[in-house]
Amino acid sequence: MAQDDSPVDAVRRFVGSLHDVTSRLLADLFPVTDIADLLAAVHSRRELPREGLTQCGIEYTVHGAGCRMISSDGREIDVDLVTDPVLGRVVEAFDAWRIRWFLDEAADGGYDHDDIVAACCHLASEGHLREVVGGRWFTLPDASREPSMRSAAAAHPLAGAQ
Image (cartoon, rainbow, N blue to C red; front, side):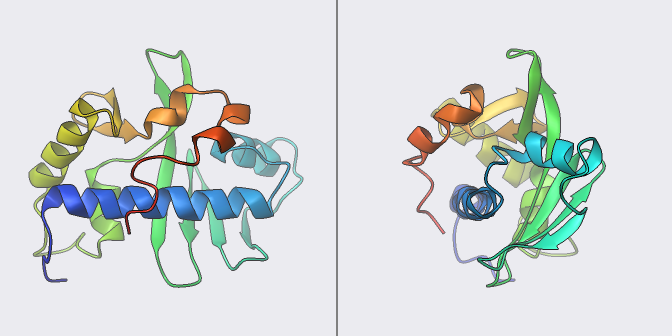
């Protein structure tokens, strides 16, 4: 994929898609409130299958500690649950590899891993992301809110960036 924008802009596209796809997935799977609840619904409560397709066309696959989501337009988002040492609980997190995969650049060429990490760190310094594990795992800043507060956070400043 050709680089038409900066690494920061590329991360913004990922974050916008993450917010959009996750929001639509959770709306279709209501009363599931977040990815941690989706994993519980699959693994422990056995209410949902490990793989599925929602009404709005989001395909999901629950894996190990996370979930891969593919929108009907082909955007592929993957998050893992990572323990946030500040909050003392798991949050939906992503790393540079997942962003590069989304950008279709996990192989040769494209954005360098270190450039994506630097872009994430930059966005975290501006409050658009939160760094969960230094230089490795990042999350949306509204991850510190309780799940019931997430709908109020739908106006995330990067949510429309795609």
